[in-house]
Length: 110
Image 1 (cartoon, rainbow, N blue to C red):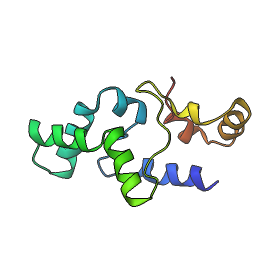
Image 2 (spheres, rainbow, N blue to C red):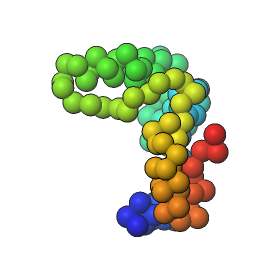
Image 3 (spheres, rainbow, N blue to C red):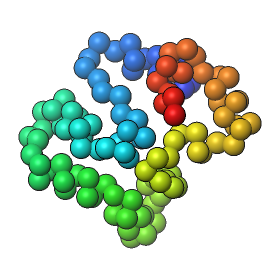
Protein backbone atom coordinates (compact mmCIF):
# COMPACT_ATOMS: atom_id res chain seq x y z
CA UNK A 1 0.00 0.00 0.00
CA UNK A 2 1.02 3.64 -0.20
CA UNK A 3 1.67 3.87 3.55
CA UNK A 4 3.92 0.79 3.52
CA UNK A 5 5.89 2.20 0.58
CA UNK A 6 6.20 5.56 2.34
CA UNK A 7 7.56 3.98 5.54
CA UNK A 8 9.92 1.69 3.61
CA UNK A 9 11.35 4.64 1.64
CA UNK A 10 12.16 6.93 4.57
CA UNK A 11 13.29 4.14 6.89
CA UNK A 12 15.81 2.92 4.28
CA UNK A 13 17.25 6.41 3.69
CA UNK A 14 20.92 6.65 4.68
CA UNK A 15 20.55 10.14 6.18
CA UNK A 16 20.44 10.72 9.90
CA UNK A 17 16.88 10.48 11.05
CA UNK A 18 14.93 10.80 14.24
CA UNK A 19 11.66 8.95 14.73
CA UNK A 20 9.32 11.07 16.83
CA UNK A 21 6.31 9.37 18.34
CA UNK A 22 3.34 11.39 19.53
CA UNK A 23 3.22 9.54 22.85
CA UNK A 24 6.87 10.32 23.58
CA UNK A 25 6.54 13.97 22.60
CA UNK A 26 3.42 14.42 24.74
CA UNK A 27 5.02 12.72 27.76
CA UNK A 28 8.43 14.44 27.68
CA UNK A 29 9.02 16.81 24.73
CA UNK A 30 12.26 18.48 25.84
CA UNK A 31 14.84 15.73 25.05
CA UNK A 32 13.23 14.91 21.70
CA UNK A 33 13.09 18.56 20.69
CA UNK A 34 16.69 19.05 21.76
CA UNK A 35 17.72 16.12 19.51
CA UNK A 36 15.66 17.53 16.63
CA UNK A 37 17.21 20.99 16.97
CA UNK A 38 20.71 19.47 16.95
CA UNK A 39 19.95 17.44 13.80
CA UNK A 40 18.60 20.59 12.11
CA UNK A 41 21.63 22.60 13.20
CA UNK A 42 19.54 25.07 15.21
CA UNK A 43 21.05 26.67 18.28
CA UNK A 44 19.70 24.81 21.30
CA UNK A 45 19.01 26.94 24.33
CA UNK A 46 16.69 26.38 27.27
CA UNK A 47 14.77 29.51 26.23
CA UNK A 48 14.27 28.24 22.67
CA UNK A 49 13.04 24.86 23.90
CA UNK A 50 10.67 26.54 26.38
CA UNK A 51 9.27 28.72 23.59
CA UNK A 52 8.77 25.76 21.23
CA UNK A 53 7.02 23.72 23.92
CA UNK A 54 4.83 26.65 24.99
CA UNK A 55 3.87 27.57 21.41
CA UNK A 56 3.03 23.94 20.64
CA UNK A 57 0.73 23.40 23.59
CA UNK A 58 -2.80 22.16 22.97
CA UNK A 59 -4.14 25.48 24.22
CA UNK A 60 -2.02 27.49 21.73
CA UNK A 61 -2.86 25.11 18.89
CA UNK A 62 -6.59 25.36 19.62
CA UNK A 63 -6.34 29.17 19.71
CA UNK A 64 -4.58 29.09 16.31
CA UNK A 65 -7.34 26.82 14.97
CA UNK A 66 -10.03 29.20 16.14
CA UNK A 67 -8.23 32.20 14.66
CA UNK A 68 -7.53 30.54 11.31
CA UNK A 69 -10.44 28.14 10.92
CA UNK A 70 -7.94 25.39 10.02
CA UNK A 71 -7.75 22.16 12.06
CA UNK A 72 -4.11 21.62 13.00
CA UNK A 73 -4.25 18.51 15.15
CA UNK A 74 -6.38 15.57 16.15
CA UNK A 75 -8.44 15.45 19.32
CA UNK A 76 -5.64 14.76 21.82
CA UNK A 77 -7.44 13.65 24.96
CA UNK A 78 -4.50 13.26 27.36
CA UNK A 79 -0.74 13.19 27.61
CA UNK A 80 -0.98 9.39 27.71
CA UNK A 81 -2.92 9.19 24.46
CA UNK A 82 -1.92 6.55 21.95
CA UNK A 83 -2.39 6.33 18.19
CA UNK A 84 -4.74 3.44 18.97
CA UNK A 85 -7.21 5.90 20.54
CA UNK A 86 -8.12 7.08 17.03
CA UNK A 87 -9.49 3.64 16.07
CA UNK A 88 -12.26 1.33 17.21
CA UNK A 89 -11.32 -2.38 17.41
CA UNK A 90 -12.43 -3.19 13.84
CA UNK A 91 -10.56 -0.21 12.36
CA UNK A 92 -7.40 -1.06 14.31
CA UNK A 93 -7.48 -4.69 13.12
CA UNK A 94 -7.98 -3.59 9.52
CA UNK A 95 -5.16 -1.03 9.76
CA UNK A 96 -2.72 -3.45 11.39
CA UNK A 97 -3.49 -6.29 8.98
CA UNK A 98 -2.43 -4.12 6.04
CA UNK A 99 0.91 -3.02 7.47
CA UNK A 100 4.22 -4.40 6.33
CA UNK A 101 6.67 -5.70 8.96
CA UNK A 102 8.78 -2.56 8.49
CA UNK A 103 5.82 -0.24 9.16
CA UNK A 104 4.66 -2.35 12.10
CA UNK A 105 8.12 -1.99 13.67
CA UNK A 106 7.62 1.76 14.06
CA UNK A 107 4.34 1.50 15.95
CA UNK A 108 4.19 2.30 19.62
CA UNK A 109 3.73 -0.82 21.70
CA UNK A 110 1.55 1.05 24.20
